[in-house]
Image (cartoon, rainbow, N blue to C red):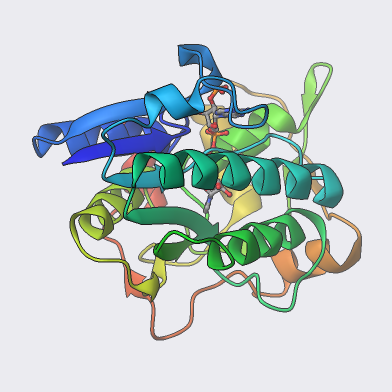
Length: 246
Ligand SMILES: NC(=O)c1ccc[n+]([C@@H]2O[C@H](COP(=O)([O-])OP(=O)(O)OC[C@H]3O[C@@H](n4cnc5c(N)ncnc54)[C@H](OP(=O)(O)O)[C@@H]3O)[C@@H](O)[C@H]2O)c1
């Protein structure tokens, strides 16, 4: 099967590419670093030739609702146009557990992303996953103010990006299902503890203060809205095991 991975150089995308190749699939990466810009559309149509399934794990680093919404709407528009022209039969997008009713910040943008996928002409599957273990590193790096770092307060049940990638490739090997069963990690963690443990594993010794994001999105991060329901599938690797294995 020929699988296009939009964002195939990212945290989860690189795993998707590796897992799909290990299973014998022919993989094409769609990312700016390989000459495909999914916002402007440059290079997308050529790259899409002969593709059977698209797994979309492209992302923007901004957490701003309107900027991130514009990104996901533009990239989905580009992908669907190229997919229609190439006769792609299945579009898979990755979203986030617990975003229903939180139409603010980055979660608001992911709701807009899901709406764009559901309104498209290509049969689709949306997988919602919790935060990756790798999210600790993303928050640490993006929470830098000069030499200082802050960590966000959040209740999360993180999962290894590798396990999310395996699920995404499983979904690509099957028929479109609409909303797939949510995927979460094996146990709840505090994001602040994860970020501090990640920083220590990198040799950083400085104090990392905890910070609460203001507004509806910040409240949803803290109040457990991002935790999975009892119906979610749970992965195997804990955050501590992931950190030890790095
Ligand atoms: N991180 C988490 O904890 C988490 C949890 C659940 C769901 N998700 C979802 O998973 C998805 C992937 O997240 P991630 O953290 O793995 O992302 P990431 O590491 O930031 O990677 C983003 C990818 O998108 C590509 N990209 C960015 N702008 C692009 C453009 N204009 N055209 C083409 N490609 C572009 C990047 O490659 P180039 O820079 O080379 O273009 C990169 O491959 C997102 O939809 C996110 O909402 C993330």
